[in-house]
Length: 274
Ligand code: NAD
Image (cartoon, rainbow, N blue to C red):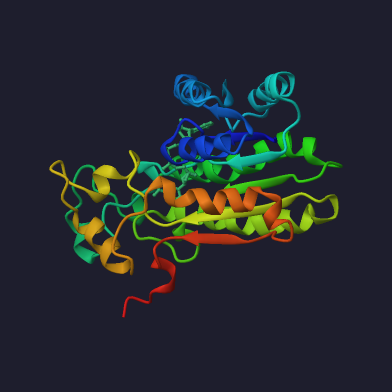
């Protein structure tokens, strides 16, 4: 039985991973900015006979993570597995259209954003949430893993780390940084036996992207349609599609696997579009 710390654990994807890891018999610390969301998942796990606690933590504040670590260590023991799940995009790092047209600059409308209107603070927010929000929890929790057996870190990258998606330069760049950092850290931690890997999920319908990909009556938007057309398996991912790879990467069954970023994308990253 291992102690697993999951950030962003109140969210759609990581709550599913938390439940799957709990069902394997691990003790789960669910960290989230939204304590109520983490507590709700913890209650669901405990009601099923698992062991879980909800802990408030901001992945961008070291002191908040240190306080969370104290609580985790006293209630569940030292951290064996860290899943860096907190992450996401922000409208301020997003352009309105995929391509710039010359007339966009001439007929500029209120609220219409081209590359030239992107806000540095919005871009910084996205870089911080995804990259610094992976680095700081690793600094705080992976120290527990040094000198112990069977410990690992699992990051969450994305499809856009391989080839950037239109409209979201900040989120694409930040996830590319997460993939790069996964490899760097795998090498850095290799002599102390801590493995570091990442998932690169394709397109999963969640609260973050539902309005971008589907209309109010549940039909696909133009962007949603493009994604399905470019996904050889012809569907969005479901949170449960991430479970088996997560269990494998967090288990000693993958004891010689480190520095990999595994796409879980229905073939999106393998398809050239032709
Ligand atoms: P989600 O929005 O459902 O969950 C994210 C959780 O992180 C939320 O509970 C939120 O409260 C928490 N959070 C946000 N800022 C935080 C902070 N500063 N400190 C602590 N917690 C914070 O998102 P999701 O779709 O489940 O995504 C989980 C991860 O998967 C993210 O890293 C996301 O970028 C990545 N991802 C998602 C998709 C997708 O299609 N949904 C695809 C690829 C990668």
